[in-house]
Amino acid sequence: MLSSKTDVKGSIDIMNWFVEKNDATQWRLPKGWLERGKCCRRGGGWLLAVLGCFLIPGERSVKAQSSALRYGEGVPPAVRRITERALDYLATTQLPDGSWAGSQNGAGVTGICVMGLMASGEDPDFGPYAQVIRRALRRIILDQDATTGLLTGEGHGSMYHHGFAQLALSEAYGVVNERLLWEGTAIPVEDRRSIAEALELAIRCVLTAQRENAWKAWRYSPGSTDADTTVSGTVLMGLLGARNSGIEIPDEAIEEALGFFRTNTGPDGNVAYQPGRSHGDGITRTAIATLVYAVAKRKHSMEYQRVAESIRRRAAENVNAHPFYYRYYMAQALFQSDLETWKTWNQRITGQLQQMQAQDGSFASGYGKAYATGMSVLALALNYRLLPVYER
Image 1 (cartoon, rainbow, N blue to C red):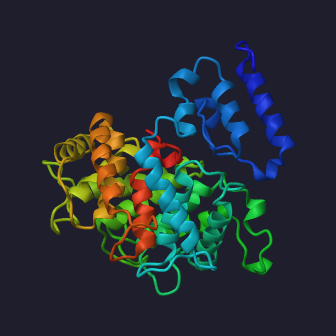
Image 2 (cartoon, rainbow, N blue to C red):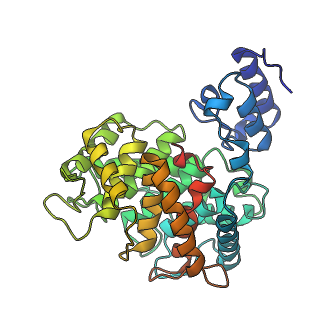
Image 3 (cartoon, one colour):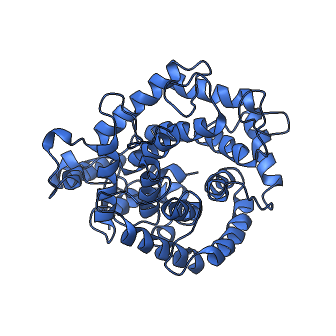
């Protein structure tokens, strides 16, 4: 055990020694990781996680993730059962090319499944789902347009897919061993890209689309001139996830996208679909806005206070429109804005998902079982709190 008198410089020296001894080209710590003393898996392996908890005296009890949460203790048994059965389903139904079947089987759904497989703390390099995760990441990268950077897959032009796929790459960046990603495959060398390279291309696509958009936000296609808050929320979370992983994102891009959300946030906290256009009940859009304001560190803003209060008031409602999408965003929004309300909501949703889960571990939706199963896992992922994008 390290002495409590170990100073910060000595801690950094020990970390640098460990990284060097374990092939420094394959290890990466996100900006601010050591300084925050976070106990996380980013950077690879359980030993780094342990070192991250203990290296900086005086901060572990305040800022580090609980080891009980890291190893599953304290996670409700019902959540563990739902998650384990769902992940087994995803692992056994993945297609040989790394994707999943379904009416929406593009890069976004593959990305959702990747995040679901990583969300409960499974080792993406050597765990039971390591090969599944690597196949899925290769599929996302191979489906990327090498010129535009668009992450969709053949026949799927929606920026929804791009946003979810980019977020998955951001969460995998620095966690998945790049050396193992293409190992043992017959993919030509010229078709291979690292996660970092694919992510940089994806970010360039997003920033180019935003620059050319009149609202400085996003719609279904990179060339769209209009924008809406659902697509924009998905794409913006992909950008924020990349920034959270240590990649430099222009502040102007984040601020302009938030400006679009401010334009669409009403005095009552309801968030419009497009400027001047309601497009039905807005609770999911309000949850999206709550999340992006929070992750972008705008909790001090008046708009954030309005949307956070709106979802808190409506947390007990049952939502039938796009329920998997709703649960995915509502879980994160409540967790960021009101932890006690999230706990109550989480317990209720866990019971609902228990009743909905099929015998094979899947969930059914009009967009396919892989989409519904991945989204259900992610709706419960805050119980584990391991994906960096889920940090409060």
